[in-house]
Length: 342
Ligand code: PMP
Image (cartoon, rainbow, N blue to C red; front, top):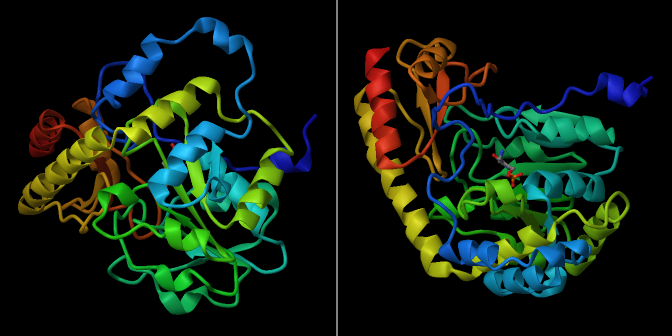
């Protein structure tokens, strides 16, 4: 027997992780490079016995490392089991049921799912013809959620005007490390209304470790903590706390990997554009390419048959496009070769 809530929920559909064959996997914005060698060292030196104890529920050491990285205090950092969990917690902590939460019509498709889970009313605001935010649409609301750079468009915009707004704002910076623009994490820590959310899944190559975090004022972080501690004290396991801290400290490896991905992105944006697959200017680790035939679904299926997995969203205004994760040069060459056979 199920509750009305469980019966009615339409969950988020994550990108495929198929096991039927080996794919060139460009569908879930994972990083093609391994995590920092410091992560490997941690895993090799692991004392299995340490796992008999619960992890630190407050992620104290990791928060100290993150506070230093972001130029804020430990009290300005909240850590969760991937940024998806941090977002879920933030929706519950920041938004009330009195007025609709607003976000773009083309953005991360988990946002409406969180709203339905928590019973929050929401409205989408159409992006303009260039996939940019229509700023005027974000007033009279109970709160705003913005992915910046946006997904699946990859477009970065200056959204600093939302810091200090008279409603709560969540800025999802999952892809910010691949952008030339600045993170608003520091500004959020000084604001009453804004929470910035980041992840180790993309730029730190740690999607499998599940670690995300929020930067906000002390008061807002305390609110996130209250929500989290009302369903699970130990959301971030001990291994993840240790490897995320090691990865965050290895700034040189991080910058090198991010620079490689940005260079590959620009190279293949040029190549895809020249092939007629017009790409938006991406500030993320993926390209959003328009299929010349206009039939994104067919292109997606054709590529899958050739062993190249990309993401296609069967949604209004974007069904003629593919979201293609930036892989290694070899993976991108395989993509280009497969596209040429379509
Ligand atoms: N935000 C955006 C915009 C994303 O694309 C993703 C990845 N699906 C996430 C958040 C969640 O990432 P994770 O839970 O792996 O940190």
